[in-house]
Amino acid sequence: MTSHFEHHVFFCLNQREGGAACCMDHGAEQAFDHMKSRVKKLNLNGKGKVRINRAGCLDRCNDGPVMVVYPQAVWYTFVDNDDIDEIIDSHLINGKVVERLLV
Image (tube, rainbow, N blue to C red; front, side, top):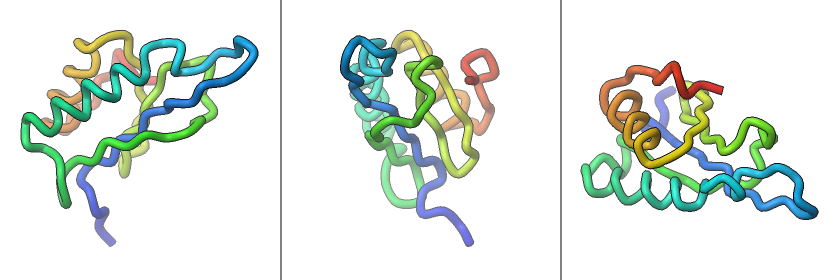
C-alpha cells in the first residue's frame, strides 16, 4: 500500500499550561507557517507530494520544537527558518535526512 502523500509533515503546535516545556514556546507556529508557505511556493504540495499539518502534542516536549515526517517517521527539531529550509531542500526534495537536526 502506498501513502497518499510522498511526505506528510506534522508540527507539534501544542501550548502547555503552567510554564511547562512546549513547542509553541520555541517558535513552532512561525516555523510551521514558513514551511507551509515555502512548500506551496515551490509547488511541492498536493496529492502524491507533500502535506504540512498541525498536530497537537507529540509527547516530545523536552526535545521541542519538533516535527515528524511520515511515512519515514523521521523526527526533527529546528531553531530557525534556515533549519526549515534545509529540511525542505534536503529531505522533502532530495530524500536525504538532515542528520544534525534529528531528535
